[in-house]
Image (cartoon, rainbow, N blue to C red; front, top):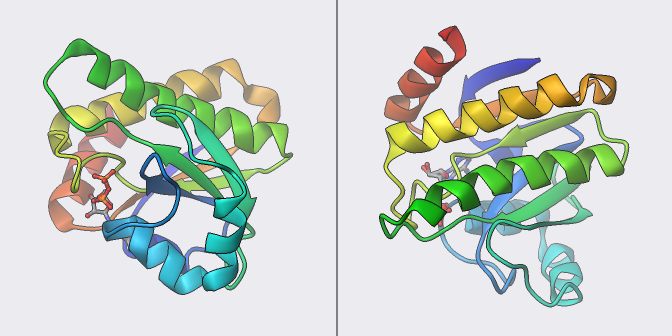
Length: 166
Ligand code: ADP
């Protein structure tokens, strides 16, 4: 099941929220900064032990002071206009969902990965995100995964409404 909301992902009560992190996993601006701020310093401590993350891959930590039990850190592509951007963005969604399944989680919330500082065009990113999530859910019905697509701004929320209706 997919649902959409507009708001702050750090407030969501789910098994895992996804962080749009950078390769270092040592924190940054945007949603990454908001998640570290809300989770507290223990999150950074655990992230240091992960030794970074490749673009398109995902790693899991506990959620600490967040209402979410876990954080799945994934690294979106910095938009360059090449065709690998789309594949890497799709991989972020698929690998995050598979990691959630491996950890027996049943609810996950995603921010609009790569559409902030990393410059991915929001409409194309929304299309890729929804296609990836729908494909994964179709292929993994036994996971019983509840997916929340969290838009921060209203423009993204409107794109998500269109994608959900498709
Ligand atoms: P990236 O570096 O992957 O582009 P950003 O954090 O810059 O990551 O932006 C990704 C998306 O996350 C943007 O659409 C931004 O508006 C959104 N965002 C920023 N803060 C939050 C938050 N607290 N909750 C949900 N989404 C957020």
